[in-house]
Image 1 (spheres, one colour):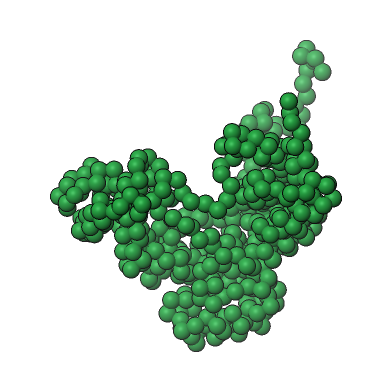
Image 2: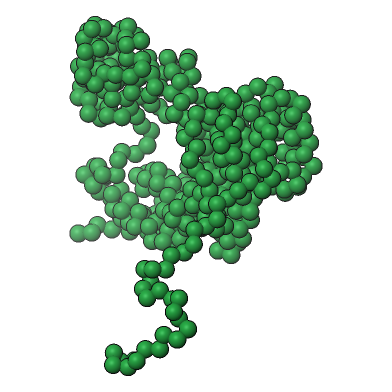
Length: 429
């Protein structure tokens, strides 16, 4: 059609003239289907919940609320459960004698969690341990969803919006406000439906076995033990000299002991920034400490003698008692140093990294889910000795498995990693 020809608008009077004018209607807000249940706070009420959950069938949606940012501990202050035929139950573990009856009621069932590594430790602490599970966040990663937060997945997959305004609440508060309880109950409202949709997608994508191996691996999840955790103090990298580092360590350890005793998150005792300025200035008494610009926090004055004593101990330390400038580690050095230290290892790593990125793109998943980056670094720094291709492939699979790689991962990456190892042996000059 040319610009001189008449345009027939018959029948499209309601059609916007530009694409920008078209707006999709907002997704409906997720609501509780069965209303808000009473919180389980007595052993008698727990027995009722356990009977209902045990009599129902199918997988169990589970979530837990902690008081991160408020408490030192990682304990669960509320546990939400939902099972078809049993409805939703909100369990307060704090006043209960034991949750052993709940573990027994759930025995043999599949647990559905979102971001299971966040909740498994606090559930295990109260005696709740799954025998099988389905992690909707991890399923989303394997399926290549760009954003895998629960609210985003519920909107993307199920077409409903979730409230998230109480995600950072202090769940140790008692009594828990009704809006918080509604928010908590909604977190398990559609987990079963979401799991079913995602399980079907995994089957269709040929990734169901990948997911099964990943979920089985999660059953043995343990939080990483951080060595020299004080080095994670924000701003500690700005400190110069081992004595300043020793001061930061001493202040961090003193703060940590107080926080653990009071069950308060350490930053509420003394912020990281205050630790860094005190470690830099090294004041010798309470007055100088409190006059140090930037030294503040609820516990700055209250525990001033503790901070002063910690700094004094550091001043009196011998040089060999002070921390090293760089953290100790059992793994390889940072890859940015490999080109100078081990050029062949550098070539191996760069070739392997490029192969991993290509494979991740082909299979539509994040590269870190294709293979844990630390496993790749370790293998490329210290590969098997053999260079016979078949034997090298077997050795690569065994080495990756010893780190914790799952069979589906080793099946996908071994060929590319063998190629990177053999290719790096050829001098580029």
